[in-house]
Image 1 (cartoon, rainbow, N blue to C red):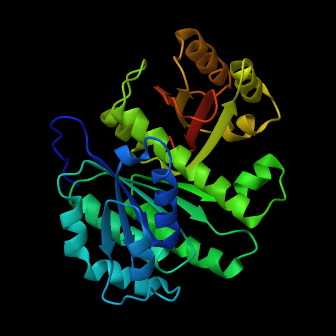
Image 2: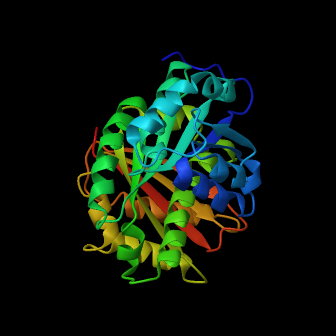
Image 3: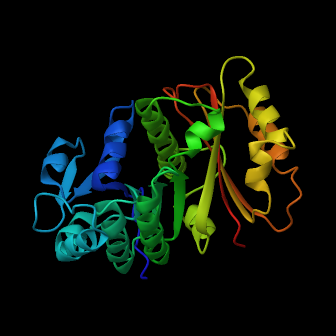
Length: 312
C-alpha cells in the first residue's frame, strides 16, 4: 500500500455502508458538530439512499432494489462501482467504514470498498455491528463478512448488538436498544476523528494512530462516563474495580488506545489520575497511546473510551 502524502490537515472520510451504516451516519449528523465531518453514504437500495442526510451518496451496483440479503450481490455491486468509489475517495487520507454485518450490502460491499481504498494508499478502519444473539442465520453471514473485512483493513472494531444492553443490565425496547447501539458506534467514530483532527493536551496525530493500529487485528472497545461533581471519581472507581468490566477489558491486552473527553476544560490533574489508574494493571510491554479532547455538547461531563487489542 502506497502512503498518501498529507499536506495540511488530514482529510478523514466517514462512509456508512448499507442500511445500518447509513442510519449510523444520520444519527451522527443530527448531533451538534456532526456536520463538520465529511460523510458518504453507500447503498444498493436507492430509496434508502435518497433518505440519507450524507453530503455524498454513492449508489452501488446497477439494481435499485437492494441485495435481498445476499452477500454475493453486495460484493458484486461494490465491484461494479469501483470507479465511483475511487472517484469519491480521491485526495482523502483516512477512511472509517461503518456498517452492520449480517445483511447483503454491509457484509458484502464493505470489504470491497476497503480493498479499493487501501490500493489507493488510504488506511482503513471499520466499525461494524454484529447481529443479536438470537439471529443465528445473520450471525453466520456476519462471520463470513468479518473474515474478509479483517484482511482489507488496518483494524476492525466490532460492537455486538446485544452488548450495550447487557452492560447496563437492561431489558429494554427495540427502539431504545437501537439508540444505545447508535450511541456506541458514534462514540467510537468520534474517538478517532476528534483525536486526529482537534488540538489535544496530549500529542496524538494520524501517524501515531496508524502506528498503533498496524497489525492490531480485531479490536474491542469500552466507554466509561461520569456526570456531575463526582464524574472523575465515578470513572476512576469503574477503572479500579477488580472484578469490573474494565478489568476484563484490559485482561491480556497488548495495545491500549485511550481517549479522555470532557465537556469543559480538561485539567492535567484529571488526565494524570486517569492514566495512572489505567496503567496500574499488570501488563508488560503494552503499547499505550493517549489522547484528550473537549466536546461542549458531550451530553456527559467526562467520557473515557478504551480501545484494546490482544495482538502485540
